[in-house]
Length: 64
Image (tube, rainbow, N blue to C red; front, side, top):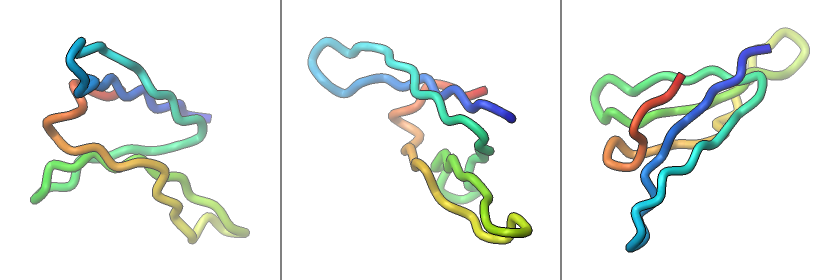
């Protein structure tokens, strides 16, 4: 099962770097908004998509 790692810049005064992990997920960057969308398919035939997280381009540093 794929794991998505998203590395984020925290917006507090310290500017800490944090990593979020999403098991059994997929990710893509929306072509017009540059939002990073992390989602998971479920249901009997994998037809339904559940959005797990959305990150604006100024928040995430990278994902893999």
